[in-house]
Length: 62
Image (cartoon, rainbow, N blue to C red; front, side, top):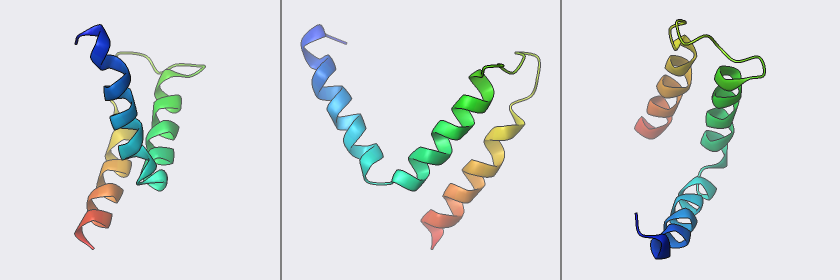
């Protein structure tokens, strides 16, 4: 990405997150669980991804 476009892209992404704070909190919680401290081993399956994804899909179907 061109250096001049970085800030505009960051603001665009932040705007998307701001539209769904509940989903943003779930995503950050999952991120923190995986990356720690303490972080999850790379050999561990990413089993914590499933429930937030299913929750998000159920909400979008409503």
